[in-house]
Image (cartoon, rainbow, N blue to C red; front, side, top):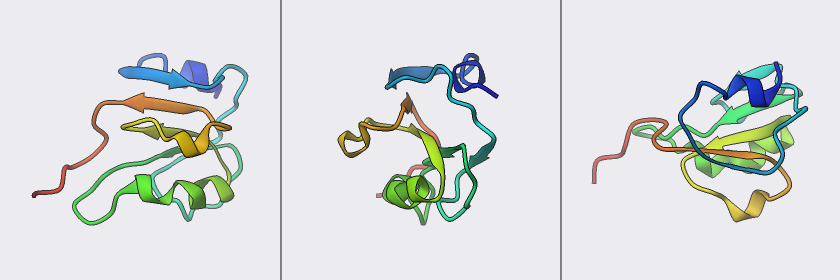
Length: 91
């Protein structure tokens, strides 16, 4: 499915980069998944924070990222910024 259509009904705060004509074949929260044309969703949990595994996700086939905050290290890949993706760690 085309990325711009996939996120159309999602509560997106900001889109960074070009999302038109990007075909998504796989969704994942696991940076170790090796699939081409993947949308990596960087979910925060009680133990792991997907935002720490962006490089691995991109190397394994992510063509776009869903994040809670913009990451300046990945300007060559579309970033879809949303409010809260997962559980917040207790402090």
